[in-house]
Length: 87
Image 1 (cartoon, rainbow, N blue to C red):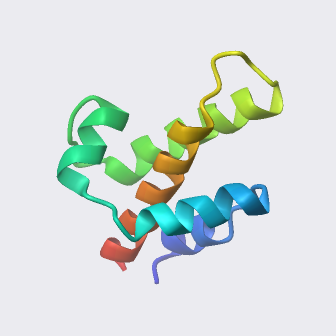
Image 2 (image 1 turned 45 degrees about the vertical axis):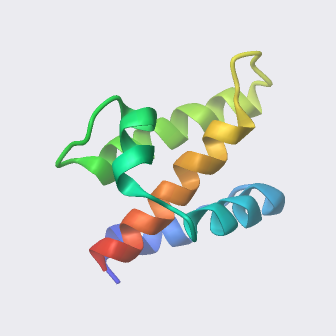
Image 3 (image 1 turned 90 degrees about the vertical axis):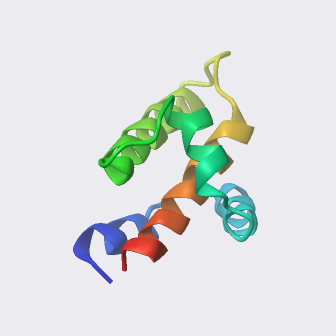
């Protein structure tokens, strides 16, 4: 496991959010999910996903009306799957 992967595995988020992301990661399909989350596929997928997850976490903590739990789960599951792929 790379250092970057280890940091993502040890991410501290609410238990229910992480459980949902783990379940979603099992059905992760890079070809369809990445373009929806990031706008396009990129060579810097992990960095872009980490940035997007960080934005979503800030929205969640601020209880922003723009926060989407569904998108947060999808981004976390993509992070998990991409880290597993990179390892």
